[in-house]
Length: 400
Length: 231
Ligand SMILES: Nc1ncnc2c1ncn2[C@@H]1O[C@H](COP(=O)(O)OP(=O)(O)O)[C@@H](O)[C@H]1O
Ligand SMILES: [Mg+2]
Image (cartoon, rainbow over all chains, first blue to last red; front, side, top):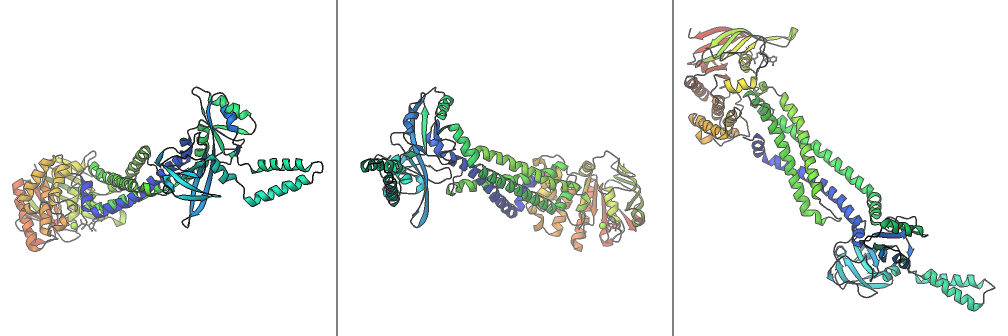
């Protein structure tokens, strides 16, 4: 006869309530694990969707995600010409926050070369961008409809396609436009500023007496064209030919002035070790604290439920029960409570994780590890109860 | 062979000036099938005597022999499995009936059998038989809280009898019952003593309850002052 189950059956209301409480706690522990994995998945989403072997960025920076990086767009030709490089494609990244429907609306805008790579991963509704200007593909997470328009900078952009889950490394949903549009949004100067700058250049050139007016005019046009140019990108990504030596290509580009070539692996390290390290530690600490709290709660519950059963335990000893019968009763109750609470926590998180504002990734491995930890906590926590139970004297059954 | 033999049994609680001699130099023998009462006022040492025989309370001096086996001689013999002797040879009945609240009447009897290595089926069969014999067949699936005092005490008796012990020790089994129910329990114990050939030692402070007992020991301040009955 299983005493643990019989006791639980008799006190089922209390048992169910405690299990639910504990289950909520374990659900939070699971969601923290899921948030941590989600952080990882988000951080690497753009990286993985791009599928590049190399990320060429501004010298001495950890760009384009962890740090700012600006390089000229036309370096793509030089990169494409490096032996071993199959394809090179420029990309622009920027985070935009505008007011939409009266609320701040934040997203990650990716500009890509329509003939290159790094564009939307898979179109689930509508189509890809076809025209060079004012078309946009948005991630599902943007919650925009096909045909909807949005004003960015000086122009309206129309949603022509919707892609699956794509987010920035900080979890904002992504949108795609052509590189030229993205450059305009990111680098195009304000008209007043342009006018001012032209006037200043003109004034400076007019101060140089050796220049003829024609020369000055020519120079002014050229200088303005350079300062007004928007042909800047954040990175040029490259894919290598099969069998090409990654390190060789990397070193070769690194030897040019002003550039750094980061491998996909290197980018992963920058993103995971640098950018989300603090968040990871924070979540880890929270999880640890919650597990300690769970352990304390389980111990307390088991201990008090043992105290409630002193008389029962004394009676069992009196009629000659073996210690294993008594230990089994306490240990099984503890384990059962842990397992049921785990089940409740799991059910809770499975039903709700898609509704969390940030991505939650539930990995089987994490859940299994947590299960083992919960079982271990229950076993250890029941020791306090078991110790108490073993100290009970059979004579205690006699007291009225 | 005697079911219980006690020789110069003494129990002293505490030490030095605060020492209390609860039982002093008790000597007697009880045969199988005998129904014996220990009668005395509160605090006279009845429970101490019973628990010293029942391997719950270690004697300070003297000898205890249960079913021919010495269990205590100036303290418990080293290396004894007290629990095993309790579950195989002794049955206990107490005032507060000490049923396990989360087990049904049937399960309360079954647990005593299962810890003595009977299978579930065997335990269920024997427990049902016992409870039926005690007229509790309609109460098998009730929890103790739903039983009347008399019914609960009969379940406790069934549990004490479950393993056909050589010795049954009952401490004030009627104290929580009204006179009629109390008398019924005593009559039942008497029948069982004869039927099972067990020695039954019943502690009570109520002299009205000891009618028909084979022998009665009267205890005052830890000393057996009078013995009435056969021989
Ligand atoms: N565990 C104990 N520690 C100290 N003194 C005790 C203990 N149990 C009983 N006594 C004392 O021993 C005496 C006999 O007690 P007890 O055997 O319970 O008597 P009865 O059962 O006849 O009422 C009493 O004076 C009581 O106070
Ligand atoms: Mg007493």
